[in-house]
Length: 149
Image 1 (tube, rainbow, N blue to C red):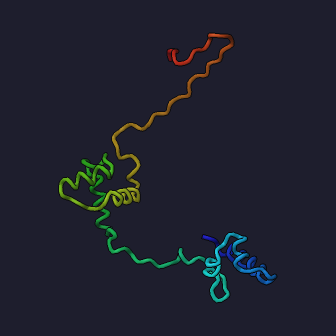
Image 2 (image 1 turned 120 degrees about the vertical axis):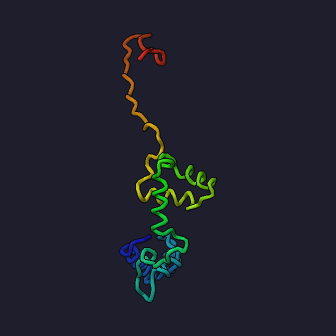
Image 3 (image 1 turned 90 degrees about the vertical axis):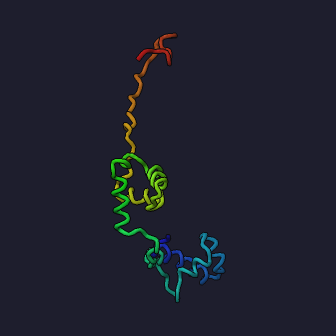
C-alpha cells in the first residue's frame, strides 16, 4: 500500500514528464508503475488514498458466536484437554461424534485468549552453558570429545 503523500509525489512526477512531452506509459514504466495503477490512483483529477483499509466488509455467515468461542475455550481448559494441542483435541472429539469447529478455528481462538503457548506437559528446553574454553600452549595438550566434564 502506497501512502497518499508518496502517491501524490509520483503522480506529480508523471504529470511533469507528460507536460514536457513524455508519453504517460513511458513515464509510468520509468518509475515502475503500471498505467492502470495510475488510473486507479487519480479520480477526477484528484489523487486518492488507498481505500482497501477503510472498505466495509460483511461479517461471514459462518463466523462463530461469542458463546461458541467461549464453549471452545472452556472445553480446551478442561483437565482432559488442558495439555493437548488442537490437532489432538479435534480428532478426539470427532471420534466421540462431537464437532465444534475446525482445528484452525481452535488454534485461532486459543491464540486470541493467549492459551496456545505451552499446552504440553513437558519441561521447557534447558539452557546449555557454553563449554569451557581450552587453550593449548603445546602439542597434544587439548583433545576434543574425549574429556570428562
